[in-house]
Structure formats: C-alpha cells, structure tokens
Image (cartoon, rainbow, N blue to C red):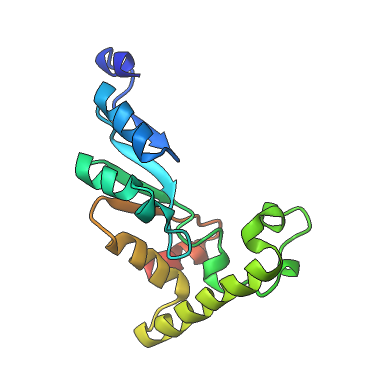
Length: 154
C-alpha cells in the first residue's frame, strides 16, 4: 500500500477492526490515516484493548461504524421479534435471550438522559461518540431522510 501511495494511486491508508498491535505495525510501514471500528456507549472495547489510545497517540482518526449499535440504541426495538425473520441481528449473541433484556437496560438509561437533554437517544449517542475526542468521527447509517434529519438534530 505504501508503494501505491508513492505512485499517487492511493492518497491515504486506513484499517478496519484492527488491534492496537496491528495498527502500530502498519503505521511503522506507512502512516495510517484512519481506523474504522465499532464504538458506541454499548460497545466500548476500543477503550480497553488499546486501540483508542494507540490511535490518539499516533494521530490516527477513528471512524466509528455502528455508533447507534445496529439501531438498537435508538430504542425502537423491544424484543427479538421486532426484527424481520432474515435480519442478521437475530443471530448475533448480543440480541439473544437474556442479553437482549440486559441491553435494554442501557437503552432505558440512555432514554432518561436524552429526555433531560431534550434530544433523541440517537442524537445523544452520536454526540457521546463525537465527544470522546476530536479524532473520532461517527458514521451513522441513514436509510431514510427522517433518520438523517434526526442525526443532524433537525
């Protein structure tokens, strides 16, 4: 990839879901511009596994996918039956059995905070992710204009 940058065929190099060790190793070969990783109030593993600190130290942007937790943190889902039969979330451990009920507790807590702030849970969650540092950029999905408007606070 570094050769492609030298040739002008690539401008920046990024990684996805890489460990802190991999990020450091890659950065030694050529500066890494961004790392894409899941990060939200629900999924904070990068705070514990060194990825967040490594990126901050090396000046690497963290692009967060699923900052609203596969839409779970929107509060629109109350049970596994709310997902379509072929929805991949039905098969992920965090949506199975007691995990679903336990995770709803986080959503309820976020709803209470959002209510005091006068915003939606989605807006609160995106603001939380963005507030974790200037090198962090949340990339929420928006299949509908109404969701985009909500994300923007309109």
